[in-house]
Figure 1 (cartoon, rainbow, N blue to C red):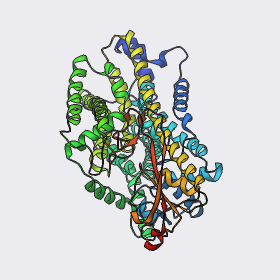
Figure 2: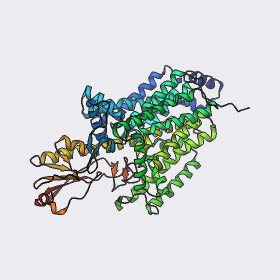
Figure 3: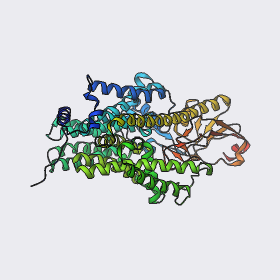
Length: 589
């Protein structure tokens, strides 16, 4: 006879069961001390109010931040949607070095662009209007984490705070790309599936399936929810049931999307994105060991609460063991025993000590997060433990070894799971109860400060790009202005009237200028014979941290820049080279 599977109570039953456990002495003293809903008058509304206030405090200060990175592509598609709702990628864009169809350039599905289109049509296209609109999905991630955590731990508020107060979430939630929208749909899909599985609730399962489909149309990675929830359900129910039929709905939606985009553009965009990831990963590959280390660096740097709460999660000996492993990695990086950057990337020698220290710190945090997933499953052997473990480890494997580059946006989906694992681990902490609240408050304060610091550094860089574009275009308003580079720089240069260079169809002439941002992508050399003179604009940054800088190894959006999601230390000024074209431009043309 099969051993019965242990299952945590449903959302409605969990508070009552917890009260019975507390009354019977089964709950630990620390757990009783920390359980906020047992305080007089504390309700669900109080918890959600705390989460709303803290989420707003983390994100609203950056609501005027300049559009940044791939925001540009999502906004271009959004404006296309307003004109052609059923053809989001049916236009050309110059994003690489020549003009291409948008469907060849973007590797993201269009749901976030549809959302931005609605916002743009109603509230306009200003930075503040769009950032405030995308605050709602960010708040949805925090609320959704809380809802899932109510099913899986007695401390859902701790779980939600542990997810919120992380650099990976706060920085990502300051943009208008599809990652946070996808994660908001993801966590509510998990919540509905977990609570609707046993006994089966058709309405919950159908709603979950629809959210999975929507999440996959916001970011393709959400399709991994299908095997994740399938595995979880099989372990929980020990059989295939009617519930499996609901998982066919998102499969059908993705198949329809594949064939629908193939009919529109001559190529199915789902498989196109997968092939792009394979090609780019091979072109910029480093060793497997270096890939694992960089992946752990991004995992740790994005989930900082797993390190900040370590004194509550692990014994002193366990912490020392983890520190020993992380120190070895940092020393190996400092001595350059392994190559952590792809060909073409270079880190300033003066930053190597800071880089190796930061790498050791982030790897230590990653070891804590991974250990949480492994130990939780080893101790409990339940479907809930399997769900959280696969959620974390599966996302890490994809972000580190399958995606086209390692970046914080790929790590983002596992942050809610790590937060829940932290809360579950605190249930059994051996720290004396009187110390737990202070340690927890200090941990969240430290992680929150670093999260705001990193978001401020990223916003400082984004705003400097906007400022540079307007300064350059204003000071050269009597000349035709061309530019290289893309991301947010392209958005503001085009807004000011400048044009990107198409290398296959150059239209350069004597007296015109070319602007080249040094910290950008898709740049190419300007032939010296075309240049009459050149100037350099240096835009200072005062953040004390970098999120994208080859010199410091910071690479929040792509590990092609370095092995760290962000780097501590003075941020270097952002240089822009302005080439004044001479008679050689006419001769070459």
